[in-house]
Image 1 (cartoon, rainbow, N blue to C red):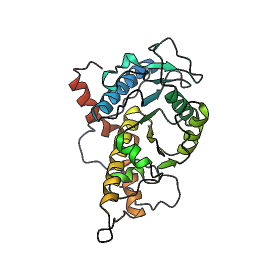
Image 2 (image 1 turned 30 degrees about the vertical axis):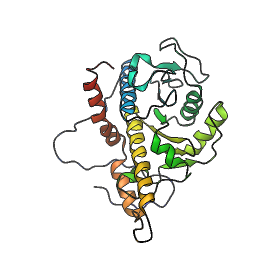
Image 3 (image 1 turned 45 degrees about the vertical axis):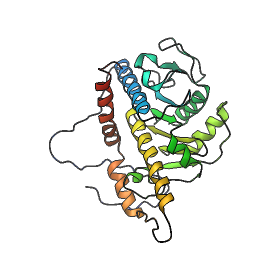
Image 4 (image 1 turned 90 degrees about the vertical axis):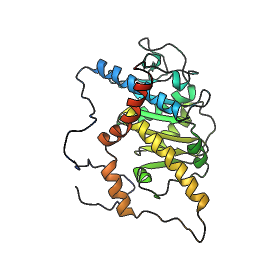
Length: 278
């Protein structure tokens, strides 16, 4: 195990955990030499992420989107079509778009959420390290976003976001142009997640599995934060995790392999529920 490091800057310390317990890993991130095969794999996992979000009640009307950067042409990305329920989405339903918002011929030709394009296109342009981004109007995320405050380190799970999430305080209404998307991307900066004041939450990842797991974790952390805030009083004040322990927990858990692995039980369950029809 690497030594504990106290985090003193605003940037997260990312270290791969070397903790092993014998045996082989239950889940591994596949390596692809054929980027077209990787595209198929990514779209399959993207569809599963939408199914998981539907099961967790993150769908609301036509709002909400997940995007993945195309591994063949990295200046383009895939996003869900407008007006199709998360629970019905399949890999073949995803829409392939370029940075200009033009729908490309190798994907579904349905229209897309304009606000979703404005947000995700700016994130993908600003963050070449980000391969996936998730945003929906989940109930606890949008409830906690009204405070315009970062999550407090009140639990082991909230340490996933230790110095690794931002807050966008400049809500400009529904996103109808690239300007608001640029503001959101700027607020995200080099962080992995961002709380959008009066709007909801957004997470990113180096895989759609990672971004989806972090969205689920942030939504639950918002729920726990709201419950703790509601219960706190003078005789029962909240106690916070110290920086040293929060940094250690973050460093030991927030790695691409671990976050990818954390989503695989959800992915496998969706494959089982749909009999592979995804």
